[in-house]
Image (cartoon, rainbow, N blue to C red; front, side):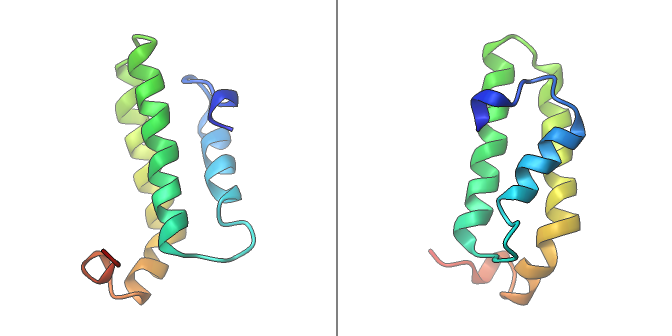
Length: 85
């Protein structure tokens, strides 16, 4: 999946892939971690292809997706402090 998403992929592609992780409506910490893993792999890909200017964009998109789609679930679980070790 990550190999198919280029560093210059539009926001819609990033959001579509991220949304697919939660498409069945199931939220859990493993999927939240998978979202961070996906974003980190894209950041590493951007750095390895000498596109450091893309990193901030990827971080912004990740934060936006979390706020819009995942944050309510995280809060309902007690927030980051209550996340399992």
